Image 1 (cartoon, rainbow, N blue to C red):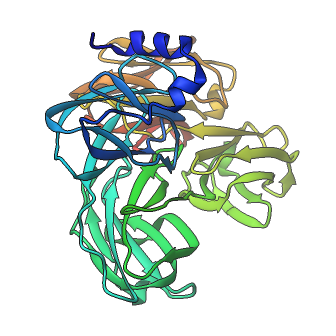
Image 2: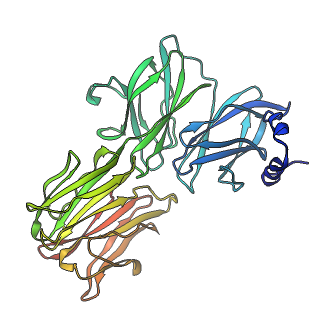
Image 3: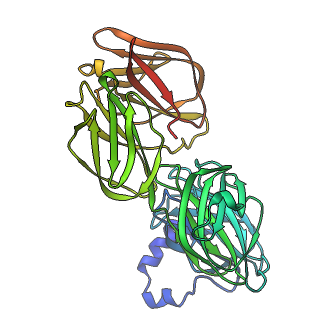
Length: 430
């Protein structure tokens, strides 16, 4: 009788360990070999079923399994589940050739898992050389350039080994580099100032064939990498950085200075304004803030690797200003027809009044207090939408009937004070 996944797990739980140890992962009909690499930031650990049989279990993020023998043939069902679960996350049919060796790469966010399969049959590189390819599994991070350089080389003086690698793409095939130790850097395509990953001490060995598999960081913009050697080791190259920006919005145009440890994030930045994201070392540090020369209480914060944060500084005067570190979820929506939007209330003249936001007369955020940010809401993309902001005393104070909310985008609506009263800045936030 053919076992389904649930029957198989129940049977395995009831069998003696000695019998299970003697099974060896398959029978004599198994004539292809596969392994699983988990490059999905959304799943801490994954299982792989092949033809309803649990073949590979508990592959943690940024690691790979051993190769295991499985049945070959046309339309072989491959199913990915969370470790220990029988709920299908992704079900695909693939052709597995007899005697062939494969690596299955799982990637994508939680709720939108994807996978790609590589046939491990690329010819070895020449002596003292390494073949390197890039697979961009960093969904939402956009196209990227990938560099392997000396430790102190400027990106302006070198060419990427792979350029413009689109999401879910392997780019331009294999590049050949001299074997050795490199600094791995990933940037947005065509923009060396937009650094997404920076890892030193990356070793590539003579004759190896390596795939650098990218995955998105926690905030959706920075990336991680996993080095997958054909037929060999799987090595994580995880981000140690995070991104942070300052949004000063204190009454009367007060200027704001913010430091994170030894890093200056904003220096006499005028209110209101939206600073650019800057890279900082992830982890715990202290935010020190002054407003028009008045020192505010320090804030101890912890920023996860790969995460994004906005530091909102707002108040009706320097002495009464508050600092609010806000986590930024810049991950793109997983459904292509949708967009994400949130509201940030930073208008001192409305400090005593909450703000409500509506799109096409549908309330999206209700009664948001001053100095805070709403959660992101996911909505259906629409052109020429009517965006309205209101407060309890005077009702609607802002209205624009020609706002395009584009599919696959992330928006933040900031409410600021200007000379003629409260108004709105709509940003894409990334």
